[in-house]
Structures are given as C-alpha cells and as structure tokens.
Length: 176
Ligand SMILES: Cc1cc2nc3c(=O)[nH]c(=O)nc-3n(C[C@H](O)[C@H](O)[C@H](O)COP(=O)(O)O)c2cc1C
Image (cartoon, rainbow, N blue to C red; front, top):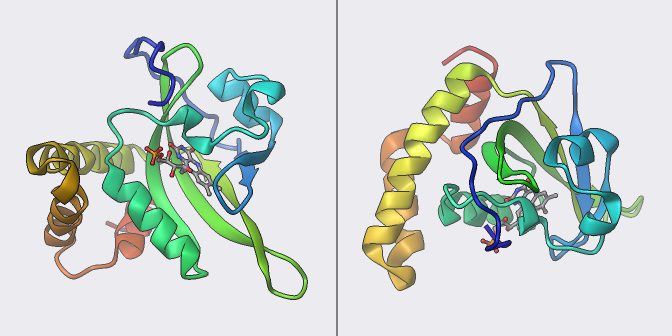
C-alpha cells in the first residue's frame, strides 16, 4: 500500500460479471489511461491516477513475489494472467482476474503495458487468497534480502511443476 494514510476497512467491493476494468501504463508502470469502470471501482478520479505509479492501488496483502513474476513475464514480451487484490481510495478492496499485456507499436516495439481485468471466479479468489497469505508469510519470515527467493520457492512448491498461468486460467475458467 503506497498511501500509508489509508485505513483498511475490510469491506469488499465487486465488479459486475460483464464489466471490464482497463488501465494502461508506460514502461515503468506509470498510469497513462484508466477507463470509467476502473475509476468508478477504485474511487479515484482521472487526475489522481494519470502519471502516477500503478502501485497506488496496491494492497498490503499482495506478496511482492507476484509482482516480480508479473514484471518478469512482461519484460520477456509475454502476457501475464493472475488474481490480484487491490485497494480503493477509501480503504475498501476488490479482487480481479487480470490479463496484463505488452502494448506494442505497429513495428513491434513495446511502448507500455495494458491490463484488462474481469470479475474473478469465487474459487480463484479463495485459492489465491490462501496462496498469497502463505507467500506473504514466507516473505516476512525470510526478511527483505531473501524475501523474493522464499516467496518464489513457496509458489513453485505449491504449483508442483505447473506454470502459474495454467494454474490461474484453470481456476478462472472452472477447470481446476
Ligand atoms: C499495466 C499494469 C497494470 C498494473 N496493475 C496493478 C494493479 O492493479 N495493482 C497493483 O498493485 N499493481 C499493479 N501493477 C504493478 C505495479 O506497477 C507495481 O509493480 C506493484 O503494485 C508493486 O509495487 P511495489 O513494488 O511498489 O510494491 C500493474 C503494472 C502494470 C504494468
């Protein structure tokens, strides 16, 4: 959570099944576009978001290891799928199933990223919440210098050889 003044309410807000939350960023993760559904759900106005790092909606219960994996995937030129818990401006939270993709110019050069999020499956949220709690505990126990290593090792152990992408897609599409 980057806004340290936000008090967590523990209240969950949800997306409608047909709603899509969209944002775009530059290469460093600074927001360059947010659609109305995104602003409505997170309760930030456009001027609060544009030019600001996307961690403005970061929830403190999200493990660092998930974002490390997301950035590795994007920087390898691939798209990332995952369950994400975010904060709203007033300290409520919401879960999404996110698809984050490199944003390419016609020539193929990556100029930023965009994320489209949909309502997550209940099973996906339940499974991700338990997994992320374990990852977060591993990060805290390992301390800052070894947090990522511990978090990723725990994730790999829980995935049992499966990729994170296959794991989350199966949960979202009801095939897990
Ligand atoms: C297109 C795009 C969308 C992102 N969406 C989110 C998001 O919804 N919530 C979030 O916490 N981080 C999101 N991030 C990741 C953030 O940039 C950042 O890596 C993350 O919040 C961790 O921040 P920290 O390293 O400062 O703790 C997104 C990044 C990109 C490129």
